[in-house]
Length: 98
Image (cartoon, rainbow, N blue to C red):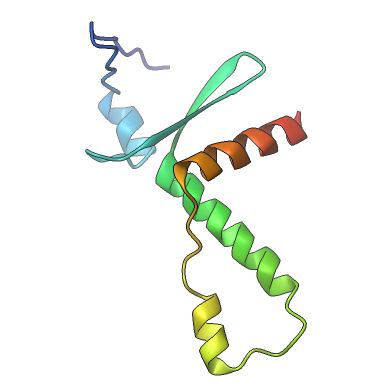
């Protein structure tokens, strides 16, 4: 368990061990979610990447027609979500799992 101090401006400095475990660097964004009164902090980029992979897997499972090479390359491009979409999907998934 780590302890962080809040500044007068509401800023928090995360301990180095936490930053390393979350693979956080300067300028990265945090996803903070609440479930049953507990708060969770995650690397928003990692969450976005996981959601993108799931979206791609879902889409690829539901493709009825055989893709030609150009379509396959286009389908393999990253699916990106805005931060609002990421937060909403995490909240939705958190509620569904409760």
